Length: 121
Ligand code: SF4
Ligand code: SF4
Image 1 (cartoon, rainbow, N blue to C red):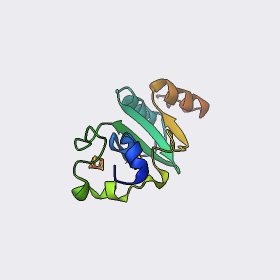
Image 2: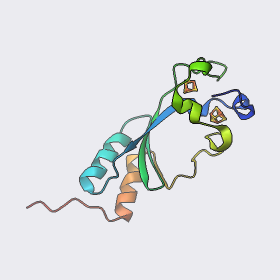
Image 3: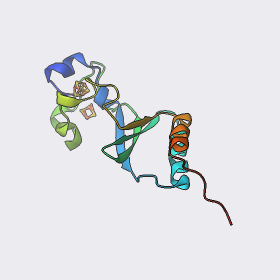
Image 4: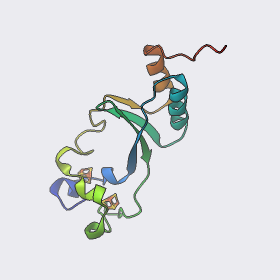
């Protein structure tokens, strides 16, 4: 991402996805939405500090072939706030509380939490 020493050795890992907060799923129907997200290629869902996020694997248009930022001086605020002190380079899973990459994984989580559909009247 930047000209910091670690970034020079990194493949620009932090420039290859976006992550956005989502509502915490609280019932079966809301978990169904998470299952839908996970049905798509390039999507994962993670939980960090009790907050749920969707992660979309997508390479930034400005990441150069040299894995450096092509608009470094004008890079967006979120890129400026990101540092190599505790970034993707250090930990593939970031120490997430939960990390789901497939429907099977969220199904297992729902099973473990006994999350079932409501009985229809
Ligand atoms: S993941 Fe870390 S080391 Fe790699 S480019 Fe981003 S900030 Fe730099
Ligand atoms: S704008 Fe630059 S620093 Fe930000 S994600 Fe794209 S390549 Fe990385």
